[in-house]
Image (cartoon, rainbow over all chains, first blue to last red; front, side):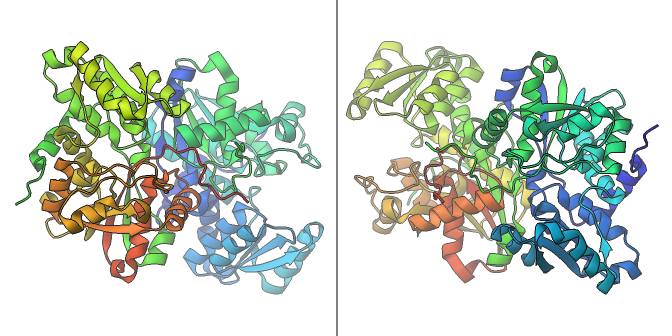
Length: 316
Length: 316
């Protein structure tokens, strides 16, 4: 009964659209992890993507899908995180206006990142952000680009799994983090088409397990209030489009503990020498949580991003 | 009058010998750095090499160059750092015995790394290491593999620049860190042959500038006593073979400040999302020290390794 928000053809079209402005990111492996798990694991390194996260893919696809008339009026979003920077970057590549509504408490480093791409920034109280955004849309005619509940965004995020499968071939399992569900939805659409037999796992912190409960109950559950997780990119609830897509694809959510997320991020840093934000390390944490089930299997994991202040590093 | 310790043919032979056991590491670029410097900079990521450093290349070439009789008696070295782990790894790939003489004060993590590859470890006081090593050679007939003053080691290290130039083509400048000079010597031999017109720069901390003074005075200067640098991989003095090679090639040494080394390592981490040890970040620090001279040029930089405890990270 559920339908995916986009088709695999949409993902393929997105791949062509964004190719000139997004990196084809490398795939990393680890002999140490192979010895530990008995699995052949292929990490798609979206931490090495433009703006430091997979979000560049969806934002580019959304901006490049606008007709000229809509593009001339610009784009707008509200975001305190990677999506704001990604949309600003995407708008800059097309030379169109971009407004990012940011909460008053947004970290200075995020504000600078958005400003660095030339976007307009509108600060407001977090609770006013939807009203403020709506007012700006009325004034400018800008197109709202939602961070995940948007079919162009979802199709764009699906290009990471497309490249991964093109590069490494057959996989038994594909794992990606779940926040709002855009990356997991795109990953699911691509995987169901290219590798129909593969198992699909979403990785989510125990502390903010609304996606797990949404898929269990068959109804979108709200984001956890006062969330206590190091994975600050995974706080949002699913949207209608991502909920429908994950339900259609039969994605199973693996919940992971905070200590295991930090341990996974440290493995990426010290053993693989790459900086992965805690949200992005949930995929490796989920792999480890699967235990013996992964032995002898070929597994793809999407590392979502690498933008982090390192406050999660243990102090020695 | 000076002669290089190895020929470019030796480097090419090494590339074939080590290919099955060393990674062809990726080349990284940064749009942010291009805006900052006006240069096209290509980083050869030896932090993503086996054992986390370029040292795997030389060690593999040395071990794989032994005849069967010598190989059967094993190999030995003294090292508290990456070379010990690299030689242990190389010996394991050939299935031969390896002994690493380590100082009593060696960090536990380095000891575990060597042990993890199955090598024998002999602990001794730092001042006794040469005597201890000689005694073990008498007992076992093992071949001593010096960390840099060895032509097979130098030829092996030259394969990093070989791959870099094969991958990115023409370069105006090539930069690598200088400690004992093995990496810089191999890089110089390769570059002088493949790109005769390119400038060759070595990067060295101001605090341990013995290589700078050695090339200035035309005589090998001893290592600095009580060195105070974050670049703990660059403490050793040049050897006869590396001094001769660097002199032959006309390598110019750029001395870099401690703050600039840390700033470069932070740039690699936060902007490029890769973990680089401070010694390995001296190349970027040297690039920046060159200032306007690099504008409009194509520059290759060898990142030597990524094994670091992160104690150099600023605490916020």
